[in-house]
Image (cartoon, rainbow, N blue to C red):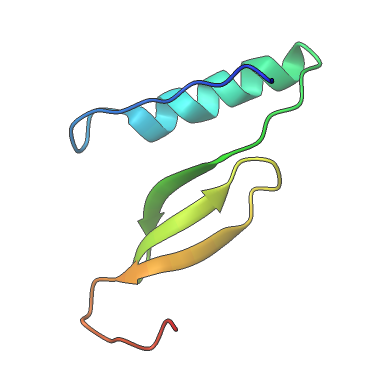
Length: 68
């Protein structure tokens, strides 16, 4: 089983910056990193693939319900 970690915290406490820093350091050490994190998106909230950097809209802040 591969090692894993989770990071939780209150809103606007730097979770995403911490995750991005950890991922950068792990990659600099030659390790592969995968997983997902929630991040802000211009239209609401996004899900970010940590392996590829791809972002997908997860929830809209404008009330529209056309994601599915």
